[in-house]
Image 1 (tube, rainbow, N blue to C red):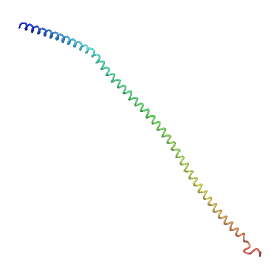
Image 2: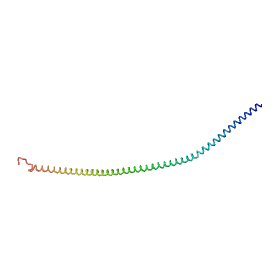
Image 3: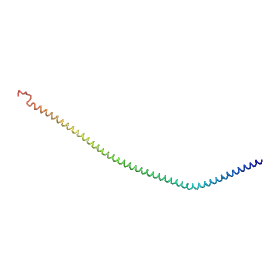
Length: 160
């Protein structure tokens, strides 16, 4: 029994020493972790400040880019609108010129056609008048011919 108590005592001492060693190791590890945590915090502080500054810079750059692109878009829109207006105005002006020329051509064509109709009517009337005059002349010539064919009456040529 005594040897068993000594064995148990030795076993407890060994366990106690193991626990002490584990405790010292844990204490050292905890202390090292606290030191490491403090070092990380110390290094993170400036990084966090830099990160905040970088975030602000990113927001500022984003706003500048957005403003620049918006201004470029507005300028481009103005140029396109101006060019489109110029093109449309030029096309409208050309259309008005062509339309005016077509109206003049229509008026000239209408006058020419009206004049041609009047000339043909006059020509037809003149031809009609000439035909009537010719018919009257023919009738007159036939009458004269009849009158000159029998100047002595109806007597035969032997009696005369």
